[in-house]
Length: 198
Image: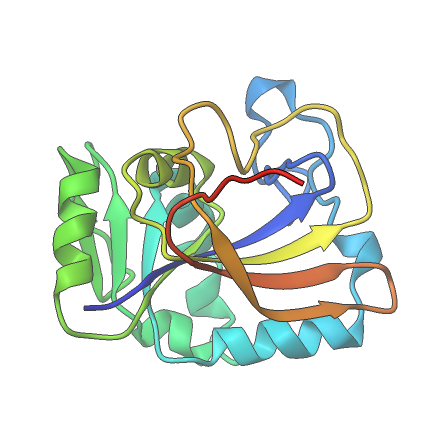
């Protein structure tokens, strides 16, 4: 069985939309695309580089795939593994693409993701893909969150956790505060929520 790991850039108020650039995702009138860039530093860059070079397959939403497909084949020297990894893409309309290997998933994405997790192979890494991530979280399919938490609030935008998030406990498996104030924290599922009193 392989794990599903969500790798996300997130603001203090939970926004994950369009960290990469101004035109990445302007849906809902989002005006702050590219909010990640001013905080980049070598410490976080080293962690991202290590995570990018682990064995993985990708699970992507259609919007993220549409952003990545024209970009990464032309920048293979930056991230060679992204081009050779199998890309599983949630889409009810797209069925073929030149960027290979790519498999398109339609219909019941939660059920199909559950099946993928039961197969042998590398872990599934999900970047961005805010709408797909919400569906997977509602079906309790995310095993780990590898977060980069930025010292900024945006007030609006697609959020990491929304209504319908399954209650769950997590443990920290890696953490770091970078020189520019980014908190890197990897969280792994750790059973059910426990309650108590002081």
